[in-house]
Length: 423
Image (cartoon, rainbow, N blue to C red; front, side, top):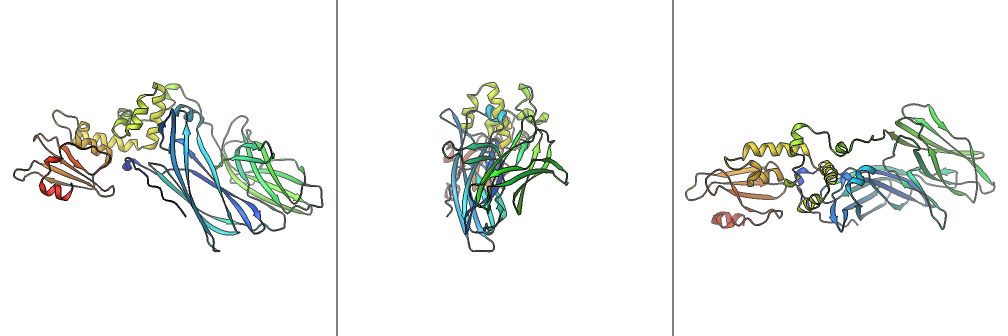
């Protein structure tokens, strides 16, 4: 059963989808069941970090469900996780990605898998259909799991790889690919079997890399293999890794696609963290105080100049800078008065924070009632009442039901009707 967790949404109008990589692999568990391992990777720019005890911490939630298409089986669950960083500078330089995994034991069959990731600001969902084979007594291979590094248990010497859910590797010197798979149904009456692998370029049948046959000793009908393959001679592009096991007189193959991408070249320090900005965007790039949380501002103000550069790059990867610029320019033209810039007015501040209201109602000609505006954000469930107290066109916020806004001290200016309707 999925446990629902309430999320606090900050400035939802600026939000977008949380993107993450997702992959899976299937291994034999028993004669009647398999172990499906699911892997996910989340780039640090996708998560909302807060400063906690000298660290940057981003809580997030994983919800998953697996439902049988051609058989009666379903399972679901929720995982609560926390990503941690020492600094944004370090994360940017290392292109930090948070990788984790979970597994489900299931019978063979076809399934629909749905996985969602959500933090305090954004959410994203991946849906996939997978087919799980029945591992019988015949010669078979598991899925091929691709990874960035190889691990060995110091006590059992069991091998495992750190998963690469995006199946993306960076082209460059000394680049290696790690592949883990298991072989089932080996003939225990013979001493060894033969293993080979080769790579095929994407979009063609040209074999780029071919290994020599590798003789492997047997220790029963099952084996686990972890390959370390040097790919620094390959050009960026799409490739297919093919693994073949020969246990005479039988042979079996399995394959997996991966991508090799260009390395990110280093930039001068002054340009390293900045986005490609238009002149309009450059004007407002550092004005995050109008939409950042108090906690984010507190952390930002404590940073060094280079730390602020890194933080701004992260912050605007999480918010829509173009939309922010549009709002800032709109309030200067719409709400500015002779004495007050548009962003310094209450209406301007609320407009930048929440965007265009779904509806605005105005009252300007009623006796003994000062001009006022009612702003309604139906999707957010928010209402704002602004009153032109001094008759100078600068409408002050008198009341709102937004939990993000403090008491205004002007609630006494509401009419009896307004108090009955809103207060």
